[in-house]
Amino acid sequence: FLIPSTRATRSLALRMTHEQFHARIPLGTAVVDQFLGLQPHPTKCQATYIWIDGTGENLRCKTRTMDTAPSSVEQYPLWNYDGSSTGQAVGRDSDTYLKAVAHYPDPFLGGQNRLVMCETFDKDMKPTATNHRAKSAAVMKQIAHHEPWFGMEQEYLLLDRDGYPLGWPKNGFPAPQGPYYCGVGANKVVGREIIETHYRACLHAGLKIFGTNAEVTPGQWEFQIGCCEGISMGDELWMARFLLHRVAEQFGVIVTFDPKPAITMGEWNGAGCHTNFSTQAMRNPGGMKYIEAAVKRMEPKHLEHMRMYDPNGGRDNLKRLTGRLETSSADKFSWGVANRGCSVRIPRSVAEEGKGYFEDRRPSSNCDPYAVTGMIAQSCLL
Ligand code: ADP
Ligand code: MN
Ligand code: MN
Ligand code: MN
Ligand code: MN
Image 1 (tube, rainbow, N blue to C red):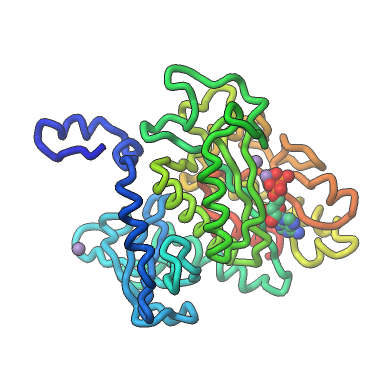
Image 2: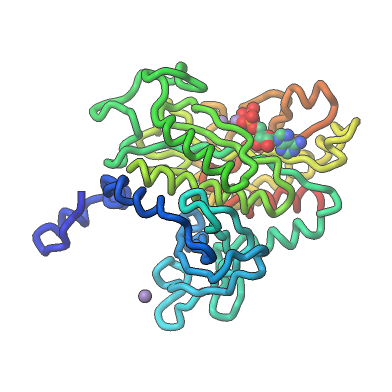
């Protein structure tokens, strides 16, 4: 419902969480369809610039008209926005800059409209504090000859308009976890409409969506993006997250990437963003020795990794990496074959074939994939 901004209702509005406030019932979708169904404009392109705000985990976007659809990312003009409204600049002098780094067909508007992933720069054209792409891209450039491939498994939880997990009984908890993972049936999973729509949206946008599955906690799902080479891993995962928020918005549902929402503090799996990694040497016959060498190089950098694996310097992950519920403990590095209680897991099939990739299970669901992939590449290869 809409909250009228009168004095009488303001205190009520203030008591609502951000999640509740934003979760209005969608407006008349049939009316929207009527206009989106008009013939697309013969030449013009609506370009939606998307960026990471000052939280390091939330996305913002705004749209402009281009006379024609750009064929390469360099053709998008530098644009600015009010950084003081996104936690990225203070007071006067708040202009902050958007530089296009990747563009994709827009599955919402169709036609020649584009979604444009951007980096953010401050008034002196220096990367903002939450622009981890700039540094990560420099690392990826240095190690490009290793042909680094990444695949990330994005877990998340769907929330109802009231901020409560979607499908959970309003006055209590669902039956204990067990039947929900990869489940099918109205008593096992909730929100599949969103998952299917998001999958199609990713394919339309040209993202390398690898797959999807229902997760252990009811209302929790996962999609994977990969294999992506170098910096494109971060570009694609951020864009896939944008598509998910945007699809869920149309259903009046909220997506949270919080690794351990308060309501799940009991016996419910938290959410991670497992990051799979390989180089050409690891993928070749005999690659196992390169995998083991890389894992050993990461071990002494454990704390440094942990600081980069969530947007709050490692604090978010402390709630999730407890050594229980398929996690390792946050303060200790461990690795093993087929062991889901380790920081790093080598899949059994990889150990059997003697080549392939490893899985870093530490990144939090709200991690910045630019920071995570940059850190892994740097520790393993530089
Ligand atoms: P899990 O068994 O851990 O749940 P998933 O099937 O969810 O694994 O995800 C596997 C991920 O591994 C995908 O994102 C995929 O892109 C990635 N992947 C597969 N092969 C490689 C590889 N050689 N290098 C890097 N990532 C890979
Ligand atoms: Mn204005
Ligand atoms: Mn998975
Ligand atoms: Mn999973
Ligand atoms: Mn995994």
